[in-house]
Amino acid sequence: MIVRLVAVLLLIGTPAVAHDSRAAEVFTFTSSEQPVSGGASSEPRAIVTGFKADLDYGDGHRESVAGLCTAQVNPPGAAFNRSGV
Image (cartoon, rainbow, N blue to C red; front, top):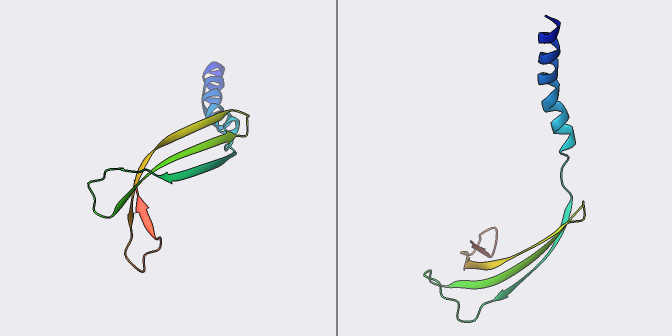
């Protein structure tokens, strides 16, 4: 009986301990975006851009990501002047 009680208490307490040990990550980033000359898109009036972002995490590790995006000009009155993927 005592062994079962100890096992149950361990199983109940483990998720709480795991949750406390995974605090929210803190990071900062810098990014840049440049139009790609001759970028082809199947969408009319779309702009193809290249991007690069550098991320610095609170624990000291760094990551860099880069890629291409396609952006379209939104209609007048939209919340943002363009949207893309």
